[in-house]
Length: 452
Ligand code: PMP
Image 1 (cartoon, rainbow, N blue to C red):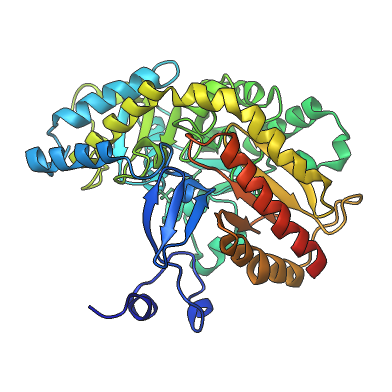
Image 2: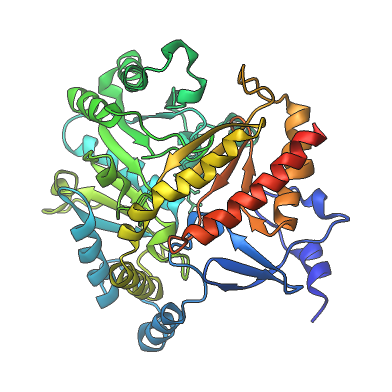
């Protein structure tokens, strides 16, 4: 076999990657994982501050998940759930329904988060066609929010730069304000009033589009892109009211926020709201095999339960037996090790440790919940002035991503909104790992300050 470095450069098309960046530089090749750490091809160790990509909840190197996959592959490696069923998909659907809030009892499996989002939009449209409101088809979501990359999901995504190369996209999506309180000066320090205002933007958008044309609102419990925007108090209660008033479905996109990221199986439970649909993926299997799901309420499945009506939608690998077996074993680890309780017990310490960084001039804001945090970087802390495009390029791509990685921390420096560093470590992490993150960030951010 040829050298891995040159083969990576010649043949591997890395996702969301400037391939040009590797014309001269080495591609980082990760070969092994152990607990919250990963190792590269030179044997160097890194703290996995992002759980891969908000995925590896139980940490790396869990042989019992590998064994669950091997056992299932030997017994029944594949069979579709198109008109048929197999035991692992049935068991997992029942288990997810038990964890999901309220009467979200029907589980439609996919292989990814984008597919779960597509499924939710298609279900919302068809449900209303079947129940006498055929014009309801538009979706409201939030600015800068990421909901996936397939055409439908990308249309719901609110990041213009990701969409432009692929336009025209699916029409009929509308984007409203997100809950970025740090950048809402007109609301002073009244978080609750800000929450009310931002929820009301959804009401205004639905009315402007015409309630008869809107089928769903897609929201994450904590918005990832932009750097972890938690919901202000009262936000989701108000959104629920608005959705009920206009008969619009509330879709909680929990591709990141489910399975312990916020210390609960589902983010909606953390913030006490009842969605009509939950979309999830990533942490369902902790990434040991790919899987996603759309979880729908009793009301939404009702029109499909009798007669000839079909939700004419599916994916070959939806409910894959090996992934379902891995998900069940993954959820066993959650129960046995009390991972949600662990997150709830330690999230305060995680926040406090990261907040120490607020003494650096470059750190404007530290925000998030659970094991999910964004650190916003600013040019001037007093005025909250952010970096221009060139500075951001120099800071994030030119310096921070590389320097953090070289210092032994894998995390994400992101400028889809204002520049942020994002942390979302495996749920098994504790104080020693929080300290390790803080020390590395302190050192690298101090150097970034000097650079500027
Ligand atoms: N929705 C949200 C909220 C996400 O964070 C993501 C992925 N980061 C997706 C959808 C898309 O998931 P996938 O990459 O598995 O298609």
